[in-house]
Length: 354
Ligand code: FES
Ligand SMILES: [Fe+2]
Image 1 (cartoon, rainbow, N blue to C red):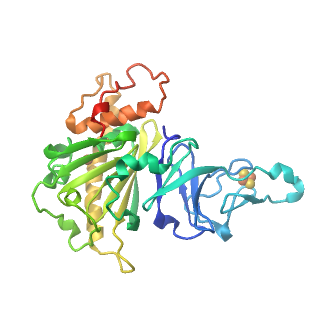
Image 2 (cartoon, rainbow, N blue to C red):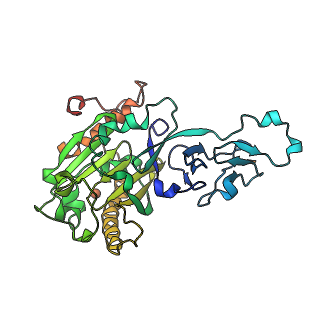
């Protein structure tokens, strides 16, 4: 699935000017995103066409308008074209043709770039339409990336993702955090095509405003959906966007092994023009970090526990039906090819997909 799906890769602020690049290595292959001289953002496998060394090492930028492989110095321009092999007398020109970097599809929704390794899949716009029709009233294209942090979790990616698809655990895992202001019993679950979904949890008190957002600018166009609830969207397969009028914490989750994952927490804020970022953000980010830590604390012991013979499968409630929907969508990526017995789910939720 990870090779055939649109996946969140970067925010526009990370690729603000020509030559800015982001090394993205959470899908099935390491990929580099780079803004070229014409302003277009392109994506390539970060793999040199000589003998496969990575072109852009972690944390670096593209030097002198070019991407230069550190192993033998092959040089590519910002459009991925091989423009120079070092020691040219050892090469005949023909053997260097068709040695450009291999490009990947890269498309944008609002301020977010997504990549997809499958050249035959639908456009990003089509893939996201079932969810973007509920988001288009918000000025998401103006959001700024103000914070990004990574957490390693020793648990399978499904444990990590499933945790963010239900509100049933609020009362227990988040007794002193989320549970205090969100009423999980009032949660509405909406299932959409392509695996996307929404969990709409009402604020516990009418007119409640998160004190941690006092004085922060709000996005234009917010409705009662955002003001009186926590609408937590899942962009299939792994991006969670719980939207508040004053900003959005994005949670993206990536598999790094069978029993290990990376959780990426991003903060998108309404444009604060050129002024400094309000100091209250530090507290807000810390508060959310507490909630994330509460989630992670349980993910790792669950990994151990479900490897026991005492684990025979799961039972799911209404508040957890997004998990089932997610798995139905995952199975659809197998195109009817045999999935081992008991590892697929019966397609049941079709008539509840809006
Ligand atoms: S592997 Fe990149 S130049 Fe040799
Ligand atoms: Fe949680």
